[in-house]
Length: 605
Image 1 (cartoon, one colour):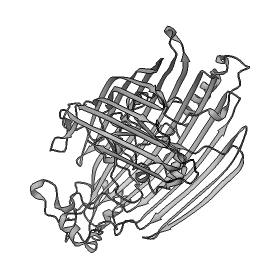
Image 2 (spheres, helix red, strand yellow):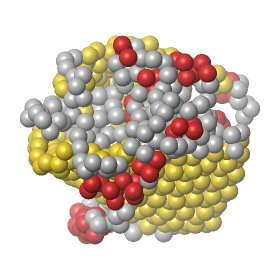
Image 3 (tube, helix red, strand yellow):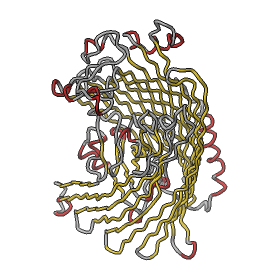
Image 4 (cartoon, one colour):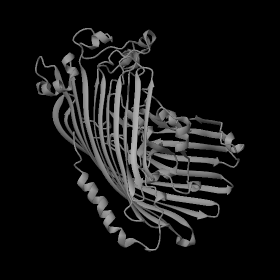
């Protein structure tokens, strides 16, 4: 595994920003309340002016409901569809407004503003989401406010805001849980803080047998977070994380006949595996000039290694509609390929070891002004982001192929008679992405008007060293620039009520892990979208919260499977629908601390 090769660059960048900021201070007499500094959220302070739909699952809600997974935490947020593969949602599949939820590839996932994907541009797949034990609140944005962030802004974005360090001395907690299927969980948190800052350590482990046979899992995470209040104007936040997963939860499903026999079976589950190791570093610095302007600087680094082993690609014998048998067969077997556990022990399979590194640097200026005599809030910023991806695949035809080290050691014998190892794939992907964004909110009477624009400039270089088992060398370069405008408005002419409307251009870059083919020179274009919405949110009546949104999304240049294993731009798709959500708190209505509430949501696409 890799250490932190870009650490010096990241630290130097943040320290440089720190060094140049003091001369920019406005008045030494201005006192800033550091408790109000928030560099981890994506929503502005004035929520009534947000030009689009958004939802917040706050700390109080998380404490009251105690959700078991991110699926339970977000199940009352309208417009969201989460497809679970396991009770813990270790690999989340989140779709927004009718878009494909597969690996959350059309939903931008963030933690404290830092991307959570394996690689945001090169492989936007989610095999991790922030454990709820570390979460202070969850922010969901689906409207035109997305243009400040990216990529993957066709559907929406979800930001997990982690808990702050203690501010009043020592604090700590220990939580143990247990359940059926041999589930056990342990979470410990300890920290100390004061006026000068603080430090906090989290340790988490969850393990169990899963909900299907042979679906054992063990995940561990350790996080260290610190905050240093450099002056009354400046604060520095650092966070280091380590995550490890070792599970037998694979993507192997069941055919119709398989399911009728035993819906909990997983014939190859004992051998199928998914291993992941994730290391992250995030640095955030904020300098507050006064109450009207602040400069936030973020630097981040992520290093992920994941390796999967699978013994079947066609659950239920399904490859094409005409070939469906309803019974799963094992692949790369020297003997009986019937999908039962005993046969799986004698079969080979395929390993997919992959490594992902990315790092980024992003300064952002938020300030108030009165240009043209109109009160305004403005945001200016840019981001530099780079990725280094290595993808390999090995296959073997007997039980020894269940060992990745065996396949690697024998890979050079591919093509020799009697060889049991096949080196199928060796691809390197380098991504250089630069993003620039600007947004201004004009306040005119009861109206808030928010135009904005984001520019994505990316260069993707794909080097193919091995493909389909054949050695070779090819380099494909795909460079694209997208201008992504947006405009939203909000009207607050009725007390505690906002009527909003917005339109923005969404963006999903081409995936070099999938949308390229070494045998063709055509370049797959980015998917773009035009997203419209019109809605209202209100707390006009005491104890009653209500929201409703009409939306329409037109996706252009949709990437589809051409049928021969390649992916091409295949035209357009449209999603139109309505979202409804509401909550009634009887405790607030009757002024009692003993609250009974009703809450629900509805989405139709």
